[in-house]
Image 1 (cartoon, rainbow, N blue to C red):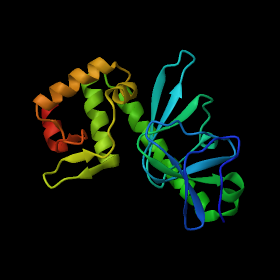
Image 2 (image 1 turned 60 degrees about the vertical axis):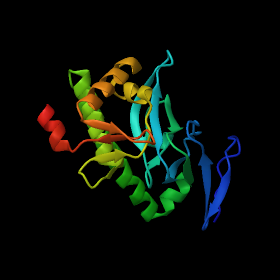
Image 3 (image 1 turned 90 degrees about the vertical axis):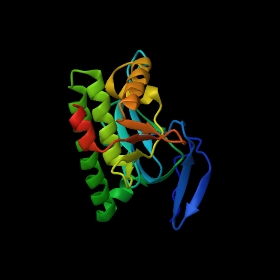
Image 4 (image 1 turned 30 degrees about the horizontal axis):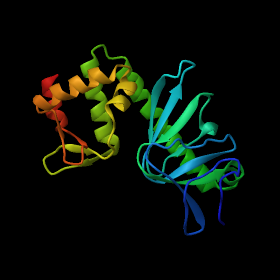
Length: 209
């Protein structure tokens, strides 16, 4: 069965994969959200945010491959999703989820994972020093969406902007830029040729703290 997103949204390029249609969104695009279903991620990373009445963004976390997100899974009326990389998404209607125990179980499993991620972000927000918040966030990203390297370091597979990181820990882009420079000089992080952040072995970071 080929599924299409509701017609009132203009979707980007669509490609077919097996029996389900994939919807493509380029990095930086806002992803349309509807209440009568959820998106499942086939490839890529999505940033989840809340926008207050003043237009300021609060970073709620991220979703990666095999994760689900959408208005049906949140109580926030200012919830938005943005492609952190090129992403391919699949649309699941509520009727389809209700009829398929396997899909429902997958949605539940990933929702629990998101709750745990939110708890970790809340714990980071409770730290007093901004530097500690940034280090904890980088470690969380390295653990959850990082790829392990032979030297024990982890390469964060998404290129986050300094503003992304600042929004996540409630500080300014200028502060994050300065702190990242300090962490580089101390050898706690490295930046590769593709501008990805490489986080030092956690034991080294713990020794620093």
